[in-house]
Image (cartoon, rainbow, N blue to C red; front, side, top):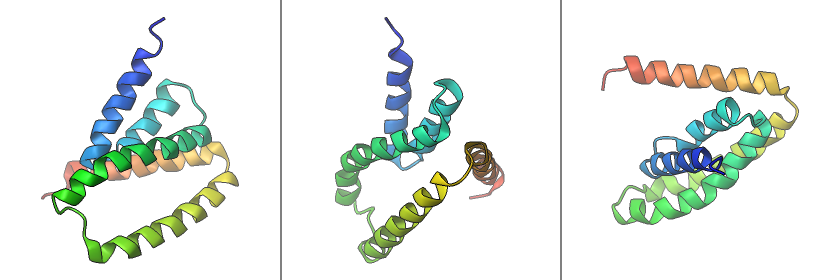
Length: 119
C-alpha cells in the first residue's frame, strides 16, 4: 500500500534539485536503476519525460531573475537538440551494461571534480 512513497520522495527530491539546476535527473537515474530496478534505457526515457515538466516549471523563475543568458540561449538549445538526438540514437545501439558503466564513470568524475576542486 505504501510502495508509492519512495518513488514520490525520489521524484520530489529530484524535482527540487532540478529546479536549482543541480542535476536532479542524474539522481533520478541513480534511484531508478540502483533502487527501483528499472533497466538503464527505460530509466533514461523516464528521466527525459520527467525533465520536460520540471524544466518548464523552473524556467519562469530563472528567466525572471535574469539567470538566462539570451545570447547563449539559441546556440545552446540547437546544440543540445542535435546532441540529444545523436546520443539517443547511439544509446539504442549500445549494450546496457556499457551504458551503466559509462554513466557510473561520468558520475564518479563529476563527483571527484566537485569534491576536490577549489572554487
